[in-house]
Length: 513
Image (cartoon, rainbow, N blue to C red; front, side):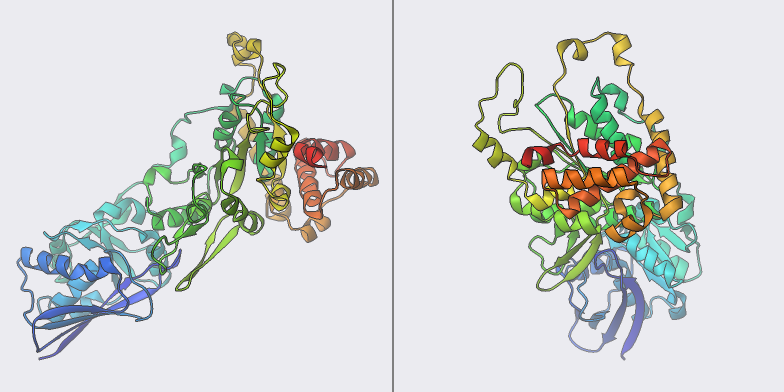
């Protein structure tokens, strides 16, 4: 007697989750279980997990020929997420679950232990978003309850064990809704750092506020110990919390990463700080040895947040050059022989570097003995096109002993992150109401349409372009900076002093001219 059952689940392709139909066919023949439909190793191994789980739950594992087809056949399937759907399909096809119509419109996600317990699965949130869009109900492991609870309007049920799901499908029990789990937003927790912790450096703090207000990229350069990393690490304390839509995008990307989604990161802007030894694939994404699976890299994990690259020239040339297109477009297109996908990469770049190989160029003690050729070679590790794509190059000078070891009054003289953040939010809101985007996101056409610049300001910008031999891209970035400075001043027209201040934040253009 041949019996067929069909159960729904979903695969993962980038941040999308195409529907997968799990077809289980139980037929006469030599006992065995075959899984077809382009399964990866973890999916092929599910037959052993499913068999042990069914037996240990006191179900009968059919001693017949079982074929499991994961359709569509040309879509790669990976991970343990299909265990639950395969187990339910076998129980339906073998007649151990009587109500075949009970699974209609329900998608199943979960890895099974040998005892039948449901274990959490990675990359669940994209699947839940797609299932909700198709108006399907979902059954997920209780271990994924925090992730599932983000889908407030969806019909999602959580379970701890295979037997609970079988009882539910037989109409003998009910499952707990995932909405019973509450995610505590990260911004309800007190911040661990504050910009007020950084002594002095008023010029660098002003640059940091402008970068936060307009969404601009920023490079700090200066000697070791001057506070470059401290400033960068407090940048996120100046940014507003993520909205619901942005948070869902960040959570979906985190969900498909190797580390997975953590509820403590909900509504918290990402801050990624990869080591300078990171590979190109680690930064922009890739699949390692698996050419069918393309994971998000650091630039996508920093979407809607900050990517901090310390010791910028120490990154490999290939890794730095790979940042050029995402900095311009806010996306990264990954292409391999057997897979292609696109990830969002709308990150804000904050970087830091020394002024020379030894780090002490310009120090009054004369400690630097680097030749001009050594300094030029060190800075040439960053190509001209990459320089152009960084909006601000700001020097962070070393503090004197009196500035560094001042009294309590000196320590409290700077503004707190909360005070600056309030101004940043007001400026951002002004930009969003006016043009629907931050100033850094305006393309040249929109920039020319939006910006009102007086003749004196235009003449100053043209003079700077000729004197410093600036590219058109660099000139547009200077204009965007001046636009943000104008917004911070509450004006409606770009004045010469705003252009002059914007030019002052392009210090390395002067050195390279």
